[in-house]
Amino acid sequence: MKLFYRQVGSGGPNVFLLHGLYGNSFNWASIAQSLSNFYQVFSFDLRNHGHSPSSSFMDYFLMAEDIRQTAEPMELFPAHLIGHSLGGKLAMVFALSFPQWVSSLVVVDIAPVDYGKEAVQEHFKILEAMRSLPLSDLKTRKEAEVLLLKTINNKTLVQFLLTNLVYQSERYVWRINLEGIRASIEKLTAFPFLHACFPGRTLFIAGERSNYLEASSIQPLFFFFPKATFVKIRDAGHWVHFEKPKEFLEVLIPFLRENRE
Image (tube, rainbow, N blue to C red; front, side, top):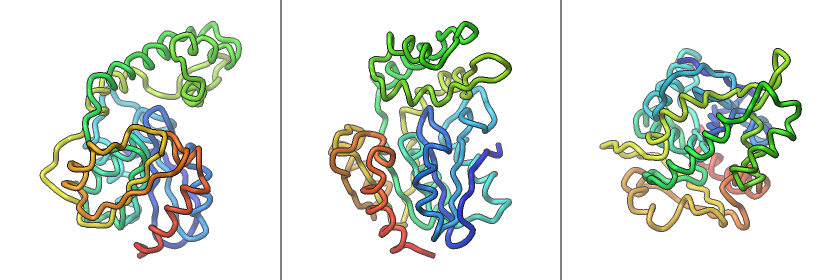
């Protein structure tokens, strides 16, 4: 599957930006622009998200192949991979599967672990709330927000989800394939075991207020990424690059420079 992408910058090494679950390439717009003076930056919409094609199922191997099929014909490899959450897991699987094409790896607030049944149930709850929204009756986005908040008690998350709600043909529609994501959620919250390790330099960036990258994740992490280093961004939650873009770039840019090709 060939993916939709946004490109900024016209010279320097290639950087791929991979968004999280329920996100899209525009989530990286500010970071991409900040990198564009020194890098050629590609922000992808993953399958079932944004403007990329839909499918009835998705897992990390399929998504890694999507990246390969999109980028290889344009001769964009090797590239620096930067992924947040779901995109971070995808970046890890890609680096483990195609290490020769990855200059360096940056993983944002996620670990190569299975987050378990609790995470699956939480996503089922979110997806059911989105599926149950009476799209044909909606008059405003604010109305959609009020309805979602009755089930999802997190205004920041609801506003993030609503970035996928678009008005077209005189009605609101989801620009995200809820059914394809729901059918795949157990694969997406887990992490496939690969008999491989990535020999290149890897940076994990975590939010201080997030619990996605905890001490229990360290042992499996080093199995896959023996050259991993860690940075925790103070007072940041899960959306580190959005909540603390200045601090995020202060960590990211020196790492990319050290691995510049």
